[in-house]
Each structure stands twice: as C-alpha cells, then as structure tokens.
Length: 414
Image (cartoon, rainbow, N blue to C red; front, side, top):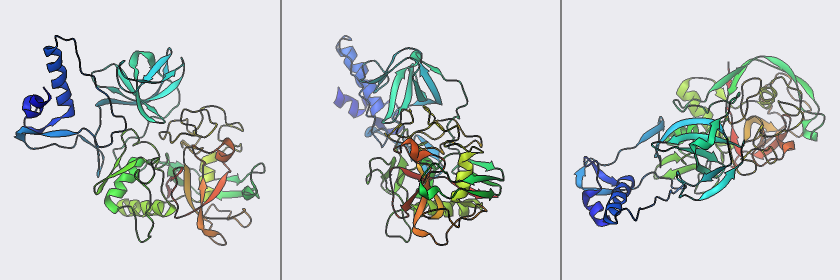
C-alpha cells in the first residue's frame, strides 16, 4: 500500500508535483482501514521537535513543485507542522486536564493541569477540538472543552506584520536610581531627570531578529558571531537552514537570546538605516526609569516577588528556571511595558561601573571612567533568583559574549 501511495495514488493535488506526508498518511489511513475491515487504523505520531516543516516525496504525476506555506514577516519563512487557528491567549483548566504530546487521546500524557492552573493557548487545531498550548519545553495539546479563557489585563502577543518592534512613549520625569537595600554597585542612590523618550513594549523577539539576520548575516568585522543559533546552543530557537535563518516553530514570540552587545548594536544600526528613525539601546538610567514606571519598591508591583508576576527562578510561573516565556505573558507595568522583571537579561548602552559615584544626572549614557569591555545587563532572567530581578539590580557582562539568558530591548530618541 505504501508503494502504491508513493507511485501516485496518495497524491491529492497532482498539479503541485509532490506527495506530502499529510497526503500519504490520509491515503494509508483509508486504504488500511478498508483492507482490514476497519480493524486496523494507522496512528499519527507528532514530531514536536521537527524543525523544517512537512517532508514530501516527488510525485510521478508531475507538477510545479512545493511552495512555502506562509511567511512570518518580511524576509523570513517557516513551515507549520500542523494547521492552527491562532488564538494567543491565556486559558485556565476548568477541571483536571491532561496535557498531551499530540491532539488526540492516543498521544502520550506529558503532565496534568489541576483545576484553575493557567496555560498559554497558541491556537486551535483545525478540524479538531484540541488546543495547542505553550509549555517551557515546546508545544503540547489539551482537549478544548477542559479549558476556558482567563479574563484580566494580560496583553495579547504582538503581531508579526512588521519588522519594527512596538514602542511605548515614556514621559519625562525624575526618579531615584539605585537602592539602599541592594548591592554595593547600586549605590549611591541618586536623583536622575529623564527627558521624554520611547522604549520597546517588549523585548526584541526571535522573529524580529531573524528578519535582520536574513538581510545582514550573523557577524560583522568582529571575528566572533553576533549570536548563536540552535546548532551552537540548544537553548537558542533560531535555526540556520542553508543560507537562511528560521525560527523554531512555537518560539517566534519568545525573546531573542544568545546575542552579544555587538549583535544588539548591529540590529540597531540596521533598523536605523531601514527606517530613518533614531533607534538605540537605552541608557542604564532610562532603562531603570522605564522599568520602575513611577514605583519606588523592589519590583514595579511592590516589595514581594509574589506569584506568577514574572519569569525567574522563584517567580511561580510555569517557565521558572526552564527557559524563556513568550513576551507579553505577564501583566504590564504602569508605563505599559512588559517583562522588565526577569525573562531575559537586557543589554543597555552603558559601560560597566562599580558604583554610581559620578553618574550622570540627566539620564544619558555613561561611558567615561567605565570598564567598556563589559556592558551593563538589566532585568535578570528566567534563571535569576528573585533578588536578581529587582528594578535596581545590575550586572556587567563581556560585550562579545552570548548567553542563553540574555537579549535586549530597543529605545528611541524623540
């Protein structure tokens, strides 16, 4: 039966010149069922980590050959292993619910949600009453009747209709930078006056960075590459296929990781030239001002980390100490910014300084007297403890290094 299918009987669209795995499975499902009087039925085993899309065989019927299924955004392509009606929203379990490796009860149970547990639904499988959900380990599936939408002020994930990150205008103001209750490098606490500027609503995502890679490449004059793809570090969700880069399916909306300070600067330069807008990395002072959003507490919401407010090691989220969460998964701060606490460290422009002695009072970038081979990281990451994701916490990191915990967020002069 398999040979009959490959010889053309499975080809449902002879004009395209290929027999896809979906067509072959449908043919075998029907043929085996008829031949065995419905006593045997082939079962589908979903390859959750399969990266390159549907495989196919050339059809003896001829045709024009395969075409890309869809485009994520300008300059990038990806193949979906399963057709979805996109939802991108948080749901909760109405009863105890099994999470499975595929959309059907024959698939392996990965875990069980308790009633009230929350999960991010990426879409509904076409022609099936199953939701695809986002776990730290990748895509999984839950029977749709076991979930209901969560209401509340949680942002939908950003669209990918443009290569430009969404920006938020931050008003001018003053604030106290640093902390009396933190590390020595957070002292002295000092007042800073900040002019109006804009900053990324979200951290730069994998999909946004892939558009840049496919135009510019992965390195400039430096011998070290700007970032590491999945072949170099399994935590990365960007894959090189021939001369092109694609995003691992299900991770398009996750923040970029494994990028050096030079890589962030190259992305900024590309975006400035492409748009004519004054993009840049934020200064450390502007980053903290935007992250605090008028708060004077350890975190934008108070002095306790709480539960499920962010992604860190001890934040009470499903991604804690496992990996990145999709951007916009947690509630925004008062300026409308997401993920300024945890998820990924964010590069800023400034050179590393051991303290704030002599720091600028106008919120501008601080270069003089610093250790400029190291640049400042802010925000903490999915692997940081709660103390390491405080609004005042800071860290110096070699500007050529890439890391599975580090990305960046853009700013813009107005």
